[in-house]
Length: 183
Image (cartoon, rainbow, N blue to C red):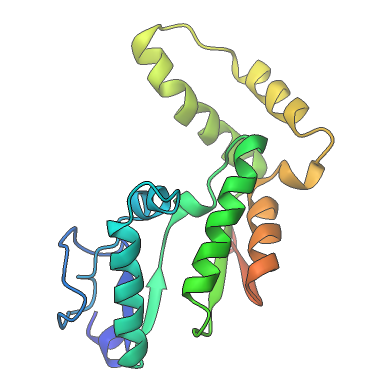
């Protein structure tokens, strides 16, 4: 953490730091800025704006102090239905407008499709197992998932989908292969 502070890197996001909320002008140690990504994402619908304002204030504070920030938020790239893709893209466009003065790099994580689809299935089916005990089979789930994207193959894999949408708004988008060893 000390090296990150020395290099002026600050994590913004609940998964990277504590859940402590701070004021926009408070001097922080690394990992203490907590922007709750799910609430920020929800605020971008326009219903509430307190997390959005907090995020904007934190980025402005770090920009004025010439700090680098790392914002980790899976919610902006998680798999959704085709109907929700336009809403997600609108939120990424909002994020781009907030970060317009920053030299931004977006890193999208790649996970093998066979591993990802299994994980996605179990995440979605877990609530149903608790309530009804009756879920569709993994085979049926995969067939339904693929059928849903048959005319839009690039949307099938969430990494490609996220890469495509982020590339519309950010110039520096990289894919990190979760399975690659070394650097």
